[in-house]
Amino acid sequence: MKYRLYYWPEIQGRGEFVRLALEYAGADYVDVMRRGGDFSFPKKHPPFAPPYLVAGKRIISQSANILLYLGPRLRLAPKDEAGRLWAHQLQLTIADWLTEVHDTHHPVGSGLYYEEQKKEARRRAADFLATRLPKYLDYFEGVLEASAKGYLLGRTLAYPDLSLFQMVTGLRYAFPGAMAGLERRHPRVSSLQVNVAAHSRLRAYLASKRRISFNQLGIFRAYPELDVLRNNLKKT
Amino acid sequence: MKYRLYYWPEIQGRGEFVRLALEYAGADYVDVMRRGGDFSFPKKHPPFAPPYLVAGKRIISQSANILLYLGPRLRLAPKDEAGRLWAHQLQLTIADWLTEVHDTHHPVGSGLYYEEQKKEARRRAADFLATRLPKYLDYFEGVLEASAKGYLLGRTLAYPDLSLFQMVTGLRYAFPGAMAGLERRHPRVSSLQVNVAAHSRLRAYLASKRRISFNQLGIFRAYPELDVLRNNLKKT
Image (cartoon, rainbow over all chains, first blue to last red; front, side, top):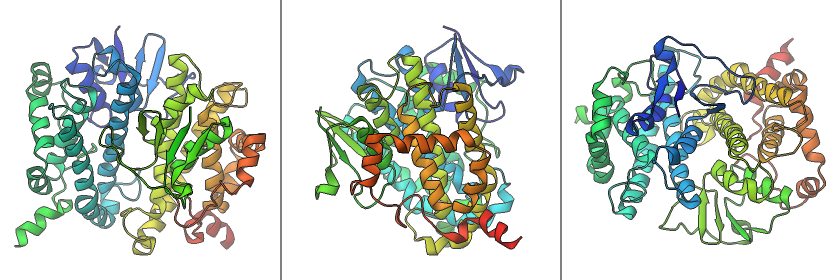
């Protein structure tokens, strides 16, 4: 099956969670917009927003839903229903987490510029780093501890592991100060990021031009004024 | 199968989307916390947050994931994979929408009181009502128009219809002024709410004590100062 992925060509964004699965699995796919293609929203099963995946006659959107579909096909999810629901549950929690990361720099409105909501962003980011980020990291550290086999679902890498890799990588870019301290208290999450990055196909992807760099249009953005824990550390 | 639902007993919240499916289908279930029970977070497949559903040995969390599981079992989703993914895609879009509703009164942090973020809430709610709410309503109006058979997926009610009913009902409570104007431009969405409410089992549920009232602890809250379109209308 040849897959066609439609997503904004200049950012990692939500599409990156799908790209990572396709790349890790060595799937046959085209990143349509990066090849100069355009969105063509179908009348049947229209997406609310990108990303969406075209697979034969199917069109599927919502990144977690795309991964639900791709998981078993790319051997990145268990085959039994209980395992697939558990993988999906983890993915949906990551999706919630990602929205909260986005809202650190866009707490008022996604259609406004960051500069129009800097004041609100400082408060939201401070709350995120103090209360929400530790809660998410604690949760995934606990899941890895319970699995005790290196990956979230056990001995075998599944698509939520790739997504957790992406979260940690992005958070290091956006909040280097806060993450330096937090990762010490979440060694399993930290190790997972390193282990996933070392897989040969993923390493090749990350070093290629297909991997878009983090930038200030994406979800993970490096605004030092929002990395409040680091600012606090500097003062002492 | 007897289901056990675990969710906060004093609010509709995210649990209500599951309750509506169970009630509409006439399923055998216990709303555990409302019967005085307590959360018991399992070590295997732990939820990040309520709601979660216990079904035999299974435990499933994330409201959209619970509905993904329940859908075919309660005859509230198609049986084929394409239909199930489409229903789930709609549900995930509703979940995103719901988060945006929540953030109108909690744009800075979910752990803070509304009173600590009233100023930010005014800006976020104004943006939500002006740009995001119309976008979501346009989308679902378009899906209903394309289906042309009264329900989102066609002739038969599916669980996303119950969730869309809940969104419209909640939005009318939270933003009566804004919704009065918007519903006129989204007649299919507006009718769907009325039609779903008229189903006999749902009508019985809504009139019962099992249906928790909207209140100022939930996701949909009636803060007149945030219903900005109404305020604007009053001035003219």
